[in-house]
Structures are given as C-alpha cells and as structure tokens.
Length: 414
Image (cartoon, rainbow, N blue to C red; front, side, top):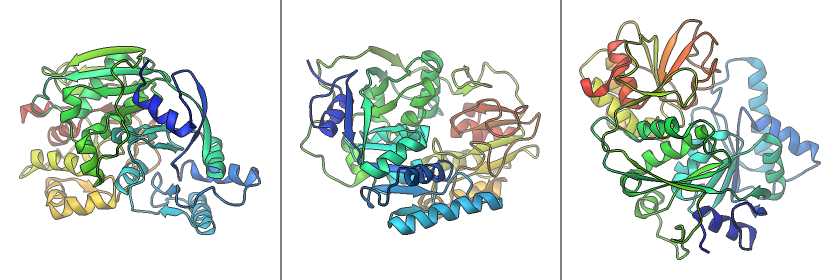
C-alpha cells in the first residue's frame, strides 16, 4: 500500500514506516513561537529545568502580534523574549520584521519534506512548500525547544482536487473560503488536507500559502501541496532526489473534486468562517474599516491587486483602509514597485509589518457596532475588538473594492 506525502514525511522523521493513525515520535526541523505564545513557552522551558535549547539554529522567536508594544506589561514580555534569545543565541525577529508565518518561509526555515511546528494555529501555512507544519500549545513547543522531538498521531489525508481556471478577480482566498463553506468548520478535524489538481499546480506560491494558512479553519491538522518546480524556484534550490509526492495507491479518507471555473468572489459572513456566501448574495453591507493584511493575505501580489484597483481613485470618506504588509521585505518590494505610494494616495493608512488588528490586540481594533471587511483568516465574535462588531472575510480585491465604495463590493464591478 502506498503512502501520502504526510505519511512519507513522518516515516522519515520517525525513522520507520508511519501510516495514518500511528503514534510516532518525530524529529522536528524547526520550532517557532511569537510574542503571544513565546513567553509561556519560555516559562514552561524553565519549569522543565532546561538550560539549553536542543539546537540554537532551529528555534525561532518572532515579535509580531503587538508590535511595537502598546503597554508596559507587554514590553516586559518582549524583553523576556529578547533576553532568552540572547541567552540561548537563537534567532529573534523583532519589531517591524513581519508576521511569523511570512517570515518562516521567506527566511528559508521551511523546506519540502521537513517537520515545522509553531505555537500558533496558522503554522499550517508552511505546507504550501511541501512541509508538514502544524500549530502547538506553548508547553508542547517548550518540549520541542528542549528535545527537538515530539509525539504525533499521523493524520489521515483528505485530498481536494481543484480543477478549472480562476475567473477574473477571483483569487486563491476565494477558493479556500469556498472550500471551507462546503466542508464546514469541523469537516476536516485532525485531517491533513492535500490540495491537488491542475488549478493548484497553476497557483503561485503566494496563493498556495493562502490556501494552506486557512486549512485550520476547516479543522485540519495541516494543509499541504506537493512540491514542484515553482516550490524550488521560490526556495532557490534544486529538486531533491527523495520522492515527496503521494503514491498513486495511497489511502485517503476522502477524495473530492471541485471545479472552480465559475466561482464568484466569496465572503465569509459573521461570525463563522464557514458562513460563506458569494459577494452578490450578501446585499448592501456598509463598512467602517477595510483591512489588507495578516499572515493570510499581505504579500506583494496582494498589495499589487489593491493598488491596481485603486490607482487614481479615492477611498470612501466613511472607511478607514488599513494596509499592513506581511514583512519588511514585502514592504520594501512594494515601495520599490510604487504600490505603497498608490495605496496611500488613494487614502490608505499603511502600518508597520505585523499582525495588526487580526487578533483584536493592536492597530485598528473595532468599536461596538462597527463593521469590517478584512483579508484576515477569522471572523469570530470579538476577534477584532468589540464583541458587538462584525467581521467579513474576503480577498484583497474585494477588500480594496469595498474600501473604495464604502460597502462590500464585487471587484468585478470595477
């Protein structure tokens, strides 16, 4: 019987054949924590009586959730992380460097076939590069910091075969919202979701990162895409000899095909990510804030489409349009290409790289009664501030179009 990609990765990491349902102890390639989880992980590491991390080159800390700090207690936690990084001689990405889930692939910490864990649920993003990546609690991350290993139950794999071509103004964000709407918020619980098919192969890496980032929103343990030439071009490396594709006779929990050819722009309505409708179904929804940012959609290609739609125009006077590049490198590239200037001339407020208002902690949280449309990944009650606010999730094109008109708008109308 053949193996899926994830089974092959765990077989290598656990030094023996690993199949779905097996409990294995696997070697971890990299472990990451940010300022929302890192201080707890450091505390747990100390409580273990540990003195040194297992490998100073493979532990990464990122300050991105409240970056820069906006109150004294948080500044103290940031200093704790800086002190730990200095003590252990590990890499720390400090204020302004970017969002952890952009930095990890961008800075070369993710390779096809590797096992990467992070103290954040959207660590599943890195499966876009053919890695097994998943989120852990702070205590589990501390155990990895100490030992470089962790136990896992090898997940079953759901295979999603995507066919057709993306229609105009329809993006990978629309595809993943559509899939979550079909599968449900718990439809892939503890599964590995393998994105496959000709449409997936045609997607750029940015699109694959968006898809895998939101796999957790259908309950998945991870999302993954078979690495191909686009993967190795992104990584600036050559294809390895090992086979990182699922075998033809691999066993899946399910195999489902989706034809995306007629897909319309999608919107996840309050207050669940699987409450998905087409942009034409939701009617007139006035907004107070539009957000282009987060680990899901704030890359150069996302800023480009927004700049293209807004060039020479002005955003609605009733809307605050926040643009938050995913990393310093993204920001610099967008500056060179003129996207930042175009967006600011149109009325956007460009913030420093970081998570911004995504988790309701920083830069742009909502007041009671306010409505936002955002490229972020969750729209739960109170996620972006007041529990009496509302969040709609959409693609960068839909968010930019909505910032222009003041209501959630079909970007195809522009």
